[in-house]
Image (cartoon, rainbow, N blue to C red; front, side, top):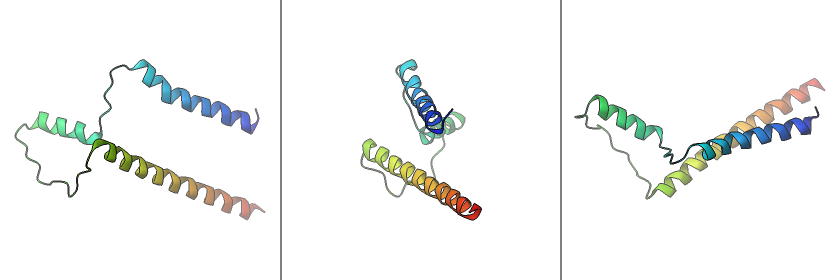
Length: 95
């Protein structure tokens, strides 16, 4: 199997993995870890009072999603750059 064909197959699998849950799971509400942790803490101790408040709250859910996406993109970019750099250094060392 050629390199390009492997990449196409892998890309197709990624698309299936991303789309399949959206088609199978109806009425899903994807919450974050913060909300799940808060619910669990209140379940264990209903009188719990948080001892720390956030310094800044995003003005809306869309802004929060945007910041999360930017954070993920920066992390992915950094990892991609680092992996590419190491691969290039390895190839240069082999020559």
